[in-house]
Image 1 (cartoon, helix red, strand yellow):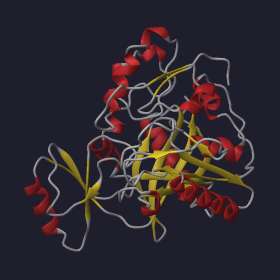
Image 2 (image 1 turned 90 degrees about the horizontal axis):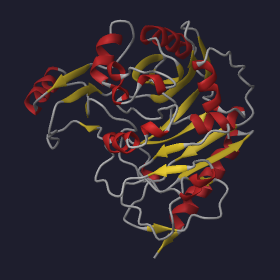
Image 3 (image 1 turned 90 degrees about the vertical axis):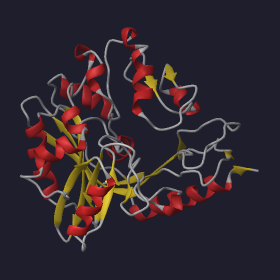
Amino acid sequence: MLGHTVYATSFFNLIDQEDYVDTLIVPSYFDSFDLKVLENLALNYVNEVDYIIFTSDVNTDRFPKSKIIGNTNTNHITDKYEMYKKLNKNFLMPMTFKLDSIKEAKEIQSNYPQKKFLVKPLKGTGGIGIESFNNDVYPEETFLLQEYITGNSVSSSFLSYRNHDIDMVTTSDQVIGSKMLGASEFMYCGNVTPLVNSNPKLVNISTKISKMFKLLGSNGIDFVINNNKVYVIEVNPRIQGTFDCIERSFDMNLAKAHIDVCNDKKVELPNLQYFTVKLIPYSFEDARYNLLQDLYVHDVSRNNEIIKKGHPISTILVSDRILENAMSKAEIIRKRIYDSKID
């Protein structure tokens, strides 16, 4: 779209990406959504590209800093405990402990019998590897025990300049752990953009955190709002999963905005045009789906490809000037996708 030759990595061979990507690099096999798999694939092509833009929490240290457009050092942010230590004295955050044994976790739980806790990996994205702490959970390595905060899951998306100013693009509702979408309890399932009646604290907190971490380009923060209390959950020092919602809601090219900001060019933010609903339906079983011929369905695999249980089938994107209309259309398409299963 911007006249560049684009190489991209993905866990899945998505046929509709051929319109946007010149070379889609996909692993021949993977048994978990380990970002090191994509890192290793990308490193095979790193000498063929001029610039690198990250859209997931990969280890940026493995890539040449001179080619990165955006934040070049993010390990102190993508490591969730390092991020917690940096921020918890200045912002509301759930209690978080870095542990090596389940025995320690049980002791902490017994000290706070009124609280619920989650087990989370030190690094990760999209809610993968997060589960409620109970006697049946046995992490295999160092993990985080984090207080579970109930409330509304929301996110901010903003552009960070080199002088540490930010432009807030929008805030969004997050869809997390939807059973109707076949997701596990804390899996990322999409967004609704923009957030209706957004809390003004989100802008203030985003501004402060962007300055503390000296962020650059397109970034975002995940929050939980509980009784007007705003808890910081995660910082995303990269283009976020809301990017396609933002582009449709504001009729803007977020990749161009990210590049311009990193080159010290002021971005004029457009006015809101539409509400956008993004849903990610996950497969309830190993199955094939016939997903072609639908303008609202994206990230489509070939019909003969088996979508494994718990893997994403596709992405639903619906925009409308009336939020309720967009939500109704998205629900109709969700049903249509599951009905398209090939027997």
